[in-house]
Length: 125
Image (cartoon, rainbow, N blue to C red):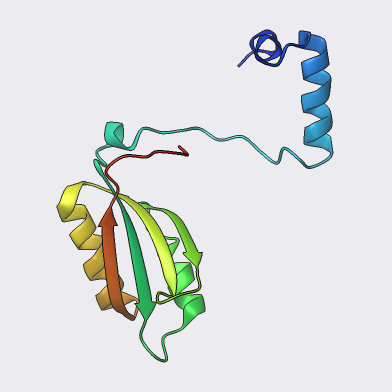
């Protein structure tokens, strides 16, 4: 977005907007920028939330490192509650989700999974 377009949105002159954004970057408030990809455009038509629990004795460090290798995992968090982790995955349909869940159980020491399909995003990206 141009400084002019951003200025129009926030009712400031383009030079004022540029100065403020640069200050926010310098002060560490703005830490980066990202591209927003349409998962459907790259063959990932299904988004799911997978809550999972590791088997007793499984290494959390190894699990987290290996999970980060999977491109369909777009978010993962260690959480409180009945699950150990919550994972958001964008998969190539039901077969892609099945492949991910089977991999989690077979290769990463996951004892339990519970998947929910995201039908529609209400707030967020």
